[in-house]
Image (cartoon, rainbow, N blue to C red; front, side, top):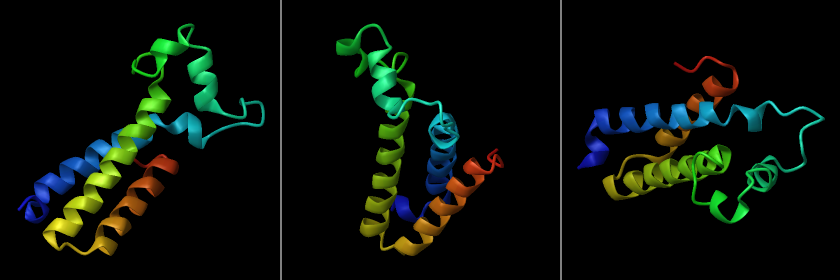
Length: 105
């Protein structure tokens, strides 16, 4: 089972770390930032209709979707493989802490 393959989980966590690192603008917002960075990203793309489907036009939006997908996948793998969910949650919290504090990679 995939949940018992440490390399699968490790690679997934590495990729999730990369995604969370790319979301740095959402973490380090200033008071002068627009109230919704995601809405601002779509509106300022010049092509709002196509922006939702383009990673180049909306990297933050696509990054959030990717992070959600990784976390959902980890939870699903834990449920199917009988891996303890708290273990993966602890790892995810550790990854997010490293990203926020700049210690990732």
